[in-house]
Image (tube, rainbow, N blue to C red; front, top):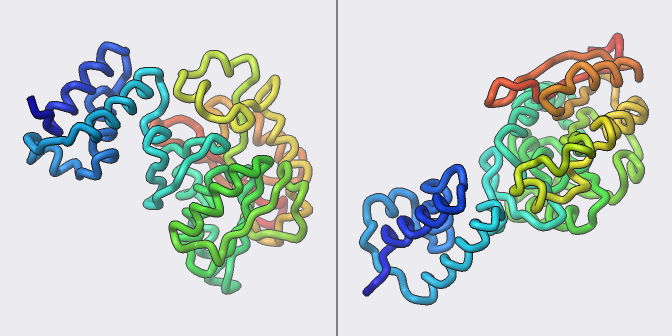
Length: 289
């Protein structure tokens, strides 16, 4: 009996239901659609389309990976972020919709600086896939960006993502921890650093714990190690009138504000994510908002 795309979606949904996955229907449609290059509309309107045996086997192997809690977009190898198509690798955190909060918060600053001076120099600390910096570059055509990371694999992925989105000429990378390999000043410092407390790593969902790089998750005993490092050196690299924006854990706003204020910065904005949780803070040098 021939297998159809509709039958394949139903088969995967049942598997994912049995495995206790939270979004079985969405995951099934996403995997089938992406792996067979079929739009969601065609999946719905033409469920009787036959699937050749080789493609059926490919989808079933991907479904087995999903049942072991590997995230759908890691199986596919890429995902959308702020309108960009970004490749993923083992060295990169999977960019998630809540991090778009940081991009939305940073964009008015980037645009205002670019309008005033003709460009905006952006540095993305711990860039991973390049998601934050590349999203800003795509929106502000005169901006330039530098992505730093301790992972060479992540930096290569970020470079590849710059190329696949037409941003390679304005995006560069440096390998090192935070500002370690950086010289000069920037108008915008952005970062989604590791902020999970070390003791809490084992409590994370397996999709995160087992597939995102630990270095991109583990923020030390109190989850604040990265913020200390960034706050300590940011003053030397932030231009006059510049801004710093960082993503935080939902319960870390006050602690992170204290760290930056103790290093000579003033908080200029607090932003919530799609779920209404505290997610992003912005800072400027004291006396220079």
